[in-house]
Image: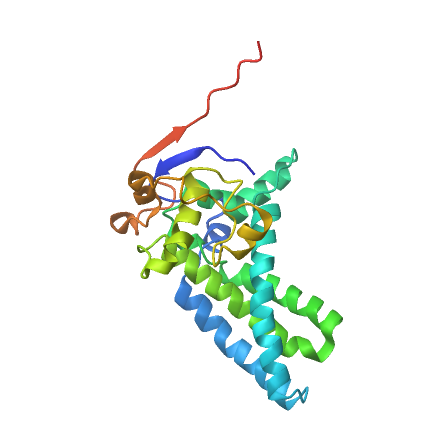
Length: 244
């Protein structure tokens, strides 16, 4: 997936149908509130129904959070940024992630919306249950908590400056992914896998562009702007290379 860089306010219009368009948006509080009861019940099932020990539940739960970080890296690098000649796949990539690169200030599309999220989560749980059987009742909640922490971190990176000095590399790595090179900096909740696979920005050499960073942060004044009426849109296209 390659997208033109855009300075903007507003949102991408993903569907003409207003009802489908509505299903593409979500709020962090709704997503957290939706999953916490479900995940808590699954952990209860792991202990009471599947009769897993507390130590086994904890091992699976925290192991799944670590597994999520690897899944996050692979999904961001190879699915969200997929390169394809197929218009349909390009469309899917744009709906999943490309619109965020065009409209980084859109706070309503950083969490997967409730309906698509529940469908995908149910599918993932089904696959995990087929592979892991009863152990999925402890592993899946950890995996989903990993996702919720990732999405929350992503939200914060676009909402506030790094709250602690040790978190600044994480913020800068993601900012550079947006405005410098989208083929680097795939980690959002962490930079571990970027360092392992050589896709980490050299933060000592890269100077921080405060103007561009500001363009990635939520615009509070435009938080309620209509989705199909961006106030300012500037498209910057790279010049075509001369083949002569």
